[in-house]
Image 1 (cartoon, one colour):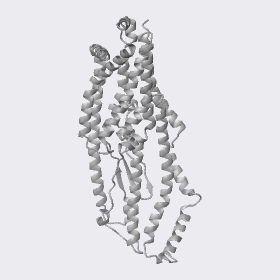
Image 2 (cartoon, one colour):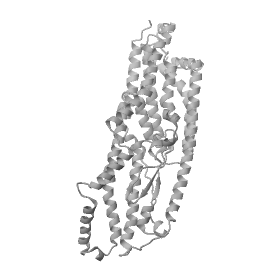
Image 3 (cartoon, rainbow, N blue to C red):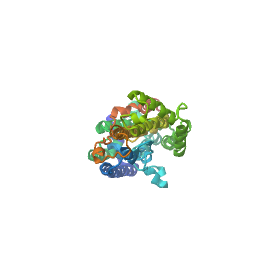
Image 4 (cartoon, rainbow, N blue to C red):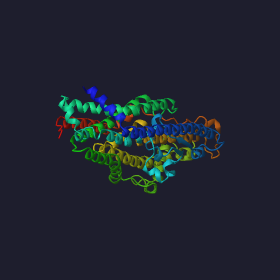
Amino acid sequence: MVVRIARKELLEMTRDGRFRVAGGVVALLLLIALGLGWHRHSNVTAAHEIAIAQEREIWESQGEKSPHSAAHYGVYAFKPTGRLAFFDPGTEAYTGVTVWLEAHKQNQFLYRPALDGNTLQRFGELTAAAVLQLLLPLLIILLAFSAFAGERESGTLRQVLSLGVRRSDLAVGKALGVVGALALLLVPAVMLGAAALTAARADSPSGGLVRTLFLAGAYLLYLGAFVGVTLAVSVRARSARFALVALLGFWVFVCLAAPRAATDLAKALYPTPSVQEFAAALAEEKETGIGGVDYDDFLEARKQELLAEYGVDDVEALPINYAGWRFQVSEEYGNQFFDRHYARLWDQFEAQDGFRQKIGFAAPLLAVRSLSMSLAGSDFAHFRRFAEQAEQYRRRLVAFLNDDMRDHAGAGFSYRRDQGLWSKAPAFAYDAPDPVWAVSGQSTALAALVLWLVLSAVLARSAAARLEVS
């Protein structure tokens, strides 16, 4: 009986002009978004590969100079883009794509595409993720708002129930009919997405197939919750018009109002400084020092330890180059400030993300959006992982150059090195996280989606059990 009901619902929907027009528009937008995303992803990946090769060539051909001058010359590290970023670019337009690594400084990321955006882009970018998160729920409402309310008004509901059809079977059959109609739209997009995923050259973050399966599961939970809520409202509504108005209000709250309100609340509860305020706070603490210990006192204490280690009374008697040693001590002193300030800043951003995940219990779009970006490798957690690895590489590279000067320059200041040393410096390599790491930070969002699906199914079933035909 359930299968017959589902087949009947699917047949009616496919014959309905609303489905053909609205479904065709949504499917077309989804295919366009996938195509545009893959084109953008391919261009970014190609540019990324070229930039890495050119940057290494520039580094190795910088000419003869002091190793510490080479540390100031610096290198660029480029943030890789994951295979699934064509589906959901997430925060990539706002976090930047490259960072300059040099001695004594932890620089901000450069080249944020959002800074070059126009006014229209404030309303959001056309991505496949946005279509699934915003437009597909709207299509579900359009298809199912009259599933029960419309039949009650037309009188067909009484006739169906008089045939002995169980109310629960009717609800399940109608839900399967909606799912079948959505499948007709999504199967071509899934096939195109699979082809794009296979053709994508980027391999970071890792585990593309597993991430894709997790991603599909997250969206199934999200869309299933909308199906359940829509049917529950249709059962309880006295008219199809009232059901449509109520469901549109629900969609506006979940997809438009709640995300904006959650972002504003997150910023208010976990404020972050502006770029200027952050730089000023960092500079101020460098002036006062940590715990009242400024750089001169820190250097003097370390120098006394060094003299005691070699059993000499003056730096000129040291068997190492004192300037090279001092450069590295300066790095270690400055790193304390970078660790404190950047960790505090990034903890605030992650606290904002965590707060938005919690609001997912009230608005499932926030939950699926958080999971989607995380599995696509385009959320803040992945950015922070890359930024921290880039910073650790900067420190290793500078230490490598300062140590060479310390160990081989003697007591003079005319020490020079060439390509022989620059080519030995390790290149930056990003260690991409696996899918388990990505999901581990999304337990709240996942719990919110599961709860929404379960509650919506329970509401729809209980409402159908008390279904009234008049």
